Length: 73
Image (cartoon, rainbow, N blue to C red; front, side, top):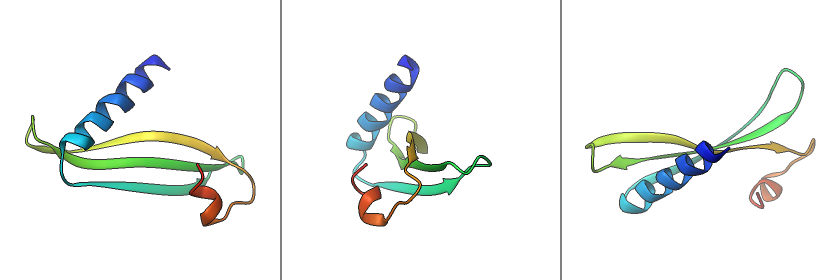
């Protein structure tokens, strides 16, 4: 859990440092019929001169969700 918080903080720092970034949300259903929202960020890592992609969060969603409900997460 601590590693995840450190990773998220580092990803957000790199995202803020980079002037160009993209956030991607992906909703899917696992084999046990749980709905999951995955939040990823892609940005340019200027220190390494490379593109960086990280997972910011994985959240379980209620059984019925609309786009407006997802935006509240």
